[in-house]
Length: 92
Length: 243
Image 1: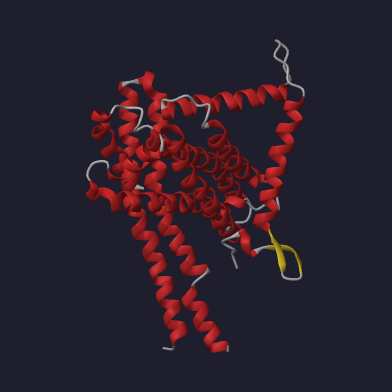
Image 2: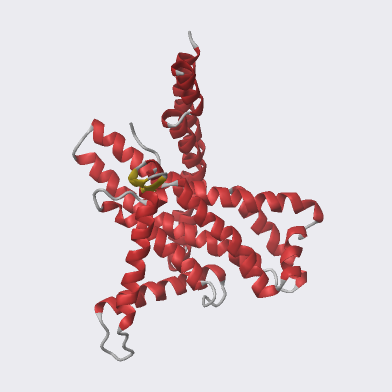
């Protein structure tokens, strides 16, 4: 197997693994956060504005770990520097 | 080929100068906001009869003031120009994504890095203007001097997180819409576009709130007497390291 196809195979595989594993943690965390926020709103409906705002900010922070994984995945698939290097080396 | 940044889309080039989509649409959003607010504020009335657009601006500015006051527990006056501008710019550039041919400048890492760098600079500026250089620097050695490197890393990593979060959210909307467009052409891309609008608004809100939280946490230390500071700071530093 030459280096270009090796890089392609490893990139695709690790891109899938990155987004798959990287979304497990944020999914669990967001589920917990939303469940807790709903319970809190059920207990204190008057505070729902504050709870919702805090929930959104917290969800965005939790979600950003998944977003980092997504960015890495996109870089691996669409803007892979190693792949570009291999293609340039093969072409030039 | 899916482009993951509007930087790569060159609209017009002269010699070695390339006008990419990020630059063009950033200026478009700026012109829209500037011209819009100039037109509306040209004829302001303080009577009972106000124009529709003045009503819109009053709702926007009043809402932002309330949110800033709720987040920072301080007078929103000095923070409103900076945080409000961040919110309006990001929200407008995300909402205009419904216009065909428009590429949101916030979907480019250059734009979001610039915005995050503004926040990175604004935090010490507001803190020093509010409480002085000495109080601001003391914040870095606040629980113990051992925390100094972690506070520094926290400052840098939260700036990085701010940039990548906004970029990743907007870019993912564009990429997913592009991929779905080639798989299931008609219905699902529209649904994802609508979801992208919601995400864009929430991200604009979150960017502004986080900027406000960072500024408030840097300048709030001096508002409380020194004996209460240790109770305040661990919560803040933990909050910063989590994101």
